[in-house]
Length: 361
Image (cartoon, rainbow, N blue to C red):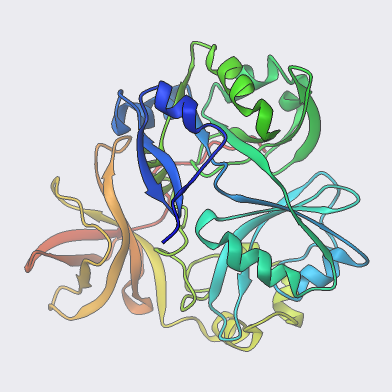
């Protein structure tokens, strides 16, 4: 078994007191001395900096690059304006989700960011296309929170003019970067792609701002859970369709109608008839969290689904969960039971997210 890899910021994480863990084959900070709850709260109130360099950054080039990528995804890239990014996913022949990703129109190429756990699979998948596929050796950091614009724009004036899901190239401290206004916390913020040899220097420079603190995987997970954002491998996977996962919005109308992507038959059928199950928010009563794998039952004790993500939500000051239940029990306000350690505990189906998004549109 190979040793876990280190991001360009590994030494900085250690110097800042990061508790390092193996995540998807990478040594990553799960939290710093302040702790997960404090890092989570700081992101919601001011701003947090996350190292997401373990994610795969890829450039796609070639003739009809947007059209060719559409053969793997149910989203439209041929109509994606230059400087815009789009959330999408690879689907398999059965209509399940192979991975979710971000695709940006960078002008003469597409810039793609894929999940760390699936980067080898995804890059191999894209190499099947008749395109030039280049995996970039660059660091990637995310600055997230209401103070993100002020912090980043002090060094990159162009950042203030970007809206949610927009991207551009710029310089930061004399270094060429790509900056995109997006993230996975539900807060406003940016992801910044940086040459590896400049990553520590730029990260330290940004952290000089009094409103910015480093945050680890623990806070990143609790933030995305409160924001109702899916985690690949938990809430979406090879068996789950985009319709079941309430991701229909990421499939543009023309693509939904015309198909031409893997698994289109199942996805179009579920769009027309409705899926048998749906992803929902679940709010347990009391203080005990319901984590992944907990069964969900109706009020008569019949099992109707399961929790896929769950934990304590520091912003809502209570337990929060996401999971799949039968479509008949998916309506907001439906009372259900969570089977925790063999005992039923009351909970309510709610509409996601638990915490409103604060993107700059």
